[in-house]
Image 1 (spheres, rainbow, N blue to C red):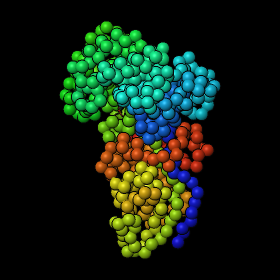
Image 2: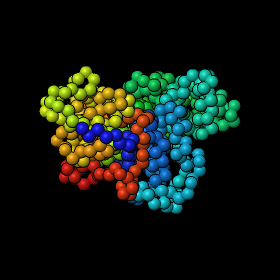
Image 3: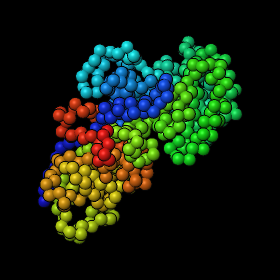
Image 4: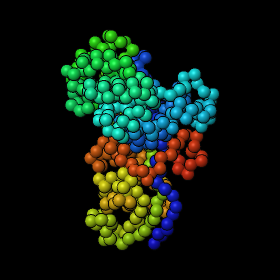
Length: 437
Ligand SMILES: *Cc1c(COP(=O)(O)O)cnc(C)c1O
């Protein structure tokens, strides 16, 4: 038995350089002049919203100036609030711009706070808590999403009381049957908003349901409906920002780019098709690591974990990994996923429980407690990649990422941090496909 307790916490290492590389790659797919609004909802898809917003607005990379993006978007006002500290203009610039390799640079002329869009429509503005949030949102100048005349009136009244103009955008439903305003109601809604002196109509948007699918017809129909609903307003006011494209549409439907795109998953280096693609060398930015807690030997025939769903067929060395489904390491990974230790892959055996998972390290006799375990790998071709994990649990990479829990500390890393960090950073394995990253 070598059951030794060791110190150390599970951590998610988030590469700013990878995120900025992905921004650059998405920009290359855009028509000239199209702006990029980065989706940082759901804690930036689990990567840490403040960390990601900081990387996107305050860091430069290669020849890309800061801010790397033109706007940020979140789902809720609470999420917008949690970005505040990371953005210029809230706390004020703290000095020179930082570069993704860790050095600082003098502030660039483009520095400044980027607009923040709140995508969930304003509803129930009369509730005290909601009213308070809305006041903060209007003062901060966030772009609020409106889908009803009642919400437009509520926001207009509140802004008038504050002596301010509220920025708003109208979301049109064109085929999701979700939160957007029905197409038939849009023109009246827009005319109403344009007539309110305390509202400033910033833009018009919609959301696409099937942009990653090879059958293009549904997306084309949504885009036709979007144009039909918004062409008149755009003709009245050319400065309105029209936006529709998620990551998949930004890559696959140039017609959906309009004035701005709203990529999410691609920023984090995940291909919108749900599989790594050699055509788009996106770099996953997220690596989840933790120290191996214990190693123990069991006899052939011994069972592992709740339900005793796995039994040792030989004398076995088991590694105990201190992550479980409370951390977002899904129960669906039980007996299916792999983890990486010392550059080798080992299977998760038995059920994943709330706080622990167990791996079979019999074939790696050199493994010791304290060894770094990569629970979720940044290499898109790794057996522990977010793609492989999503497949193991019958879900999509988005869900695997956003489930990663609050006990997992998010740590920003750059290539230059390698030497300081006990965890090493490895480039994703595009070389394995015969193409440089
Ligand atoms: C999440 C979201 C996006 C980004 O979608 P990805 O597929 O992650 O690129 C864009 N727009 C809206 C309204 C969203 O909710």
